Each structure stands twice: as structure tokens, then as C-alpha cells.
Amino acid sequence: MTKRRWIIIAIVLAAGGFAAYELRPYWMADQKVAAKAAPRARVVAVDSAKAVRKPVPIDVDAIGMVTPISSVALKSRLETTIVGVHFEDGARVKEGDLLFTLDARQIDAQIEQAEGNLARDRAQLAGAERDLRRYNELIGKGATTQVNLDNAKTQADILAGTIKGAQSALDNLRVQKSYTTIRAPFPGRISAANVKIGNFVRPADTAPLATINQMAPVYVSFAVPQRVLADLRDAMAAGTTRVVATIPGSGRSEEGKVAMVENTVDAATGMVMVRGIMDNGNETLWPGTLVNTKLTIRTEEAVAVPTVAVQRSQSGNFVFVIKDGAAHVQPVKVSRTHQGETVIAEGLAGGEDVVTDGQLLLSEGTRVEPRSRKAGA
Image 1 (spheres, rainbow, N blue to C red):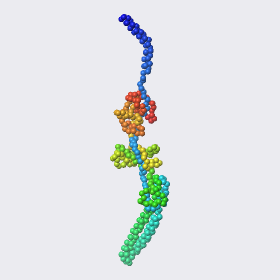
Image 2: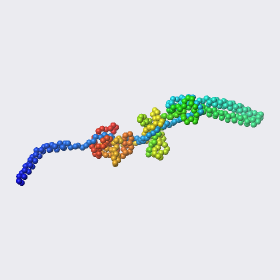
Image 3: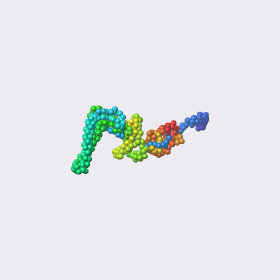
Image 4: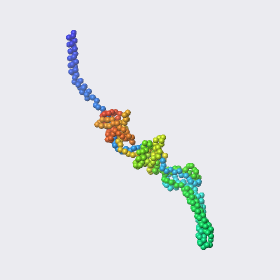
């Protein structure tokens, strides 16, 4: 039985070896197919842009309010009646334009009376001066006394003083007469008239006759953090400040410069008020309007990349730099952002290709394939 069992085992092994030999070509073909189907290294398609070294302005954004440089509330300086309104409500006026005419008949009568009194006093002075000359001649001949001469001189002096008083009264009345015509003290836009022809006005009235606001140039007032105060003062001394005020929603803007900085910092907020002056020749900015302001303190050379290229991790900010077809993690130090770009203080020298889209699929050394180059990169 033992010999027979060994014979059976030998026959089975021989049959298995023969089958393996017959199936060898198929097994080798499967190995070749498997080798051909082996996965190649992963390549990620990304968008990229260049890190550019260029002049980048240092900006401060704030909310500002337009205020007129000059604003005047027109009021009457006399108790009288309005006899003429010479402008249309909301019209643009020039310096010296006639706006209101007041009733001047009473003052005209007083002026005529004062002129009559002045003429009388001048006639009396002329007579007193003739008497003085006559007494001077008589005193030399011994025909009159010194007392008469002194009295004549006193009378002439009194009348000379009377004339000065009468002249002053006449001048005052003429000034009062000038108050009966109200003119624009500077160019600007006038409000609606609060009075009409026939209304009685007084100096004690609280409501003005109308209001004029200067429209060009205008001020834009806004607050900036105290940390930029030193740089701002240096920029003002160098004349490099620039202020742009934009009306929200319209995109219309005006450009100007810093006119002044408030002399104190608000201790509660740590902010300081700044006033920019705008030409506003087209009256783009209207007094009282809230605007978005951008204060440019200075411009400096720096490396800038698109803000979307900067990634954040627990260890800090970084960008993926493309080098030799692979993405490499490059730690960077961010200085600030400006109009969709991030200014890099440390980590990039300029000229590097950085990934702007597709970072979620990347890690150190991942092979990349740029899809396209953004305009301006």
C-alpha cells in the first residue's frame, strides 16, 4: 500500500507540472498587462501667477463725510420788509450776485436828513472861520479884545467837531443802507429761500433767509488709526499724500490731498480726524454725503502676489511655489493687502511662480501642470 500511494502522488505532481508548463504563456501575458496598467505619478492641474516686485502704495481705508469749506446762513441785519428775491431755489451763485433786496425807504429818508444837517454845519463852520479871520485882523489893529478872538476860535472848533459827528452819522446810515441788499459772499449753491417778497424780517429771527454752501473745493473728513499718524505727517511734509473719495454704489469719485490733521487723538477710540481737500469741479461730492475714502500715505517697492495664492496653516502663512514642475511649500510673512494683492514682507524675492488655484490637492513635492497664466502675471 505504501508503494502504491507514492506512485499516485508522483502521477499527480507530474500532471500539475505539465499543466503549469502549458499555462505559462498566459501567466506571463497577465504579468505584462499588469505592468502596463501600473498607475503613473499624480499630476495636479493648477492656475499660477508670478510674484512681482513693483511699487505698492500704503493705503488706509475709512468712511468719510463731505463738508463744505465755507457755509453761510444769510440773515437780515435790519427790521424791514423783503421787496425782492433774485435767485432760483437751489441755483448756483457767483460771488457778488444779488440775492435779496430789503425795503430801504426809511433809511433813505434818514440819509437825506443827515446830509442836510451836514450841509448846515459846514455852512456854520464857514461863517465861524470868517469871523476868526476878521478878529485876527482887528486884534492886530487894537480894534478888538483877545476875548472876542478866543471866542471866535472856540466856535470854529465846536463846529468842526459837529461836522465830524454829522459825517459819522451819515456814514453809519450809508452802511445801514448797504444792508438792504444781500449778496453772495462766495461762489456756491444756495438753498431754497425761506422768505418771499412781502415777508417782514428781523435780526432776531432764528431761521436764515437762505444758506449758501461752497461746492468747489470741498472737505472730506474721516478718521485714521493713530499708528499711521507719524507716517502721515512725514508724507504731508513731503507732499506725497493722496485721498480718493468714492460715492458708494455709483463708483464716481474725486481725488485730492490731505489738508490738515486734528491736533488731538481720540483717547476712547485711538483714532485721529483727517481732513482731505477735493477740487470737486464737477460737484461730484455733495455736502453731507458719506463716502468711502482711501488715503495713500506713500508708495514703496515690495513683492506682491494675488491674495488667493496665500494659504494659512497652524505654523503661519505660506504659498505653493512651482519649481521644476513640482509644488513646494514656501513660508511667507504678509505685510498687508492692496486691491486684491498681498504684499509679502519675507519669503519671496519676486519672479517666482505661485499657485493661485488648486491648492487643496497639493502637498510638498506634488507634480503640477499649470492650466493657464492669468493676465498680468
